Structure formats: C-alpha cells, structure tokens
Image (tube, rainbow, N blue to C red; front, side, top):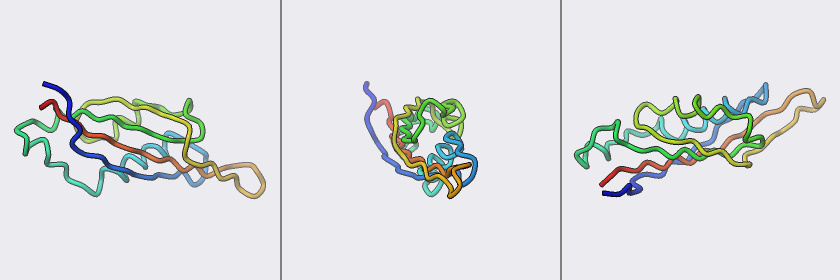
Length: 112
C-alpha cells in the first residue's frame, strides 16, 4: 500500500511578545487542528495512531524552531516537521522585541 493524502489543514499562530518561533509554530498547528475532529482514520478502518502527519511551518527564523515540540502538539499520529522561511516578524516601536507570526500546513495521510 501507499500513503494517500486525506486531509489538509491550515493554521496561523503568533507569539505577541518574546519572538519565540516555536511558540508561534505550536499555536499555528493548534489553530490548524483544534477546530476539527479527524474521523477519516476510523472511516477507513484504521487507528488514529496510524495517521501520518507532515507538518509544514513557515517562520522568519526556521533554525530557531524546536521540531519535536511542534510535533508533540498533534494529539495522535506520527510524522515529521518541516520548517521553511516564511511567516512574519513585526518589531515593536523601540526595536527591543518582536511579534512572530507562523503559518502551518498539516497534511494528514493514511496508508491505504
């Protein structure tokens, strides 16, 4: 069998103060997943734990993202996190801090 894409979810997350790209990425994944109940696995006769997740994150500083922490946001399934340059950094007026905006695309696949 082969992995087949079943679901695409898109989210946005921010860290208002602190410029923490991981925190913004975690919030983007929550935004993508938390408004849904993914019943596709059970409908296909699979366990939720069999879902494969490809989590794609866009942030201004990709190297600063803790991929394991971002993956841990997913309630079930196994997967990978890819981080690319994107999102947005908005400095405050005096240049001492920034707001970070992260974007997430979560691809859910099953082996069918």
